[in-house]
Image 1: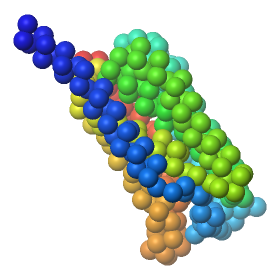
Image 2: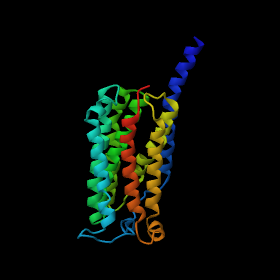
Image 3: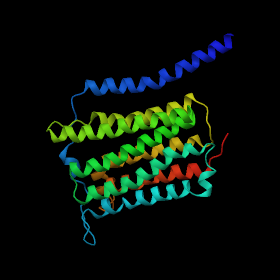
Length: 263
């Protein structure tokens, strides 16, 4: 009886632990003033054109997202992909993730041809889709397949809603990035907690942490767009490297699915 009570208490405690980072991040976001999109963000370090394409490397490097997303979709719908899941429906969030990665390539490529807030809206909408789909997949693998699939539409509404809210707020002259930033930060905190709190359904949990590390490295490259461009003697900018590393993260997820085994 005592053991059963302890297990029940532990099961009840886990959702509370998962909610805590979200509550803290939300409280922090509400405590901050609205964060408008700095127009200087669109002034990237590498603005070289090639073959008639403006901002050549920043634009062309988005083809890596297209290739990574298509590779992932090809794997999912092949024979090996069908063997990668205990239940076939577990593949649904991953299919959306890889499709969203293709949309990231299209949206970000379009944005970099003439960077402005309107183009950035479509880039961020695709990114939000990818983030929420991947979070749903991890919830399904750790908490339960049904939980992940039930959560998927709610996550998509929250992710896309944060982007639409940002676009709407910018159109009213009072831009506010806080909800979108929250939707990016929460998965980065929640996914390691899920790995810690819930037993693994598949091998290769370290790959999930590597993907998070790659994305954080991509963000650092983005923040260091001009310093990286200067350090490389104008060969490549931090933002272009962001695309390369983030696309590698997408490929790493496909690699993880190919190599893992059910436990």
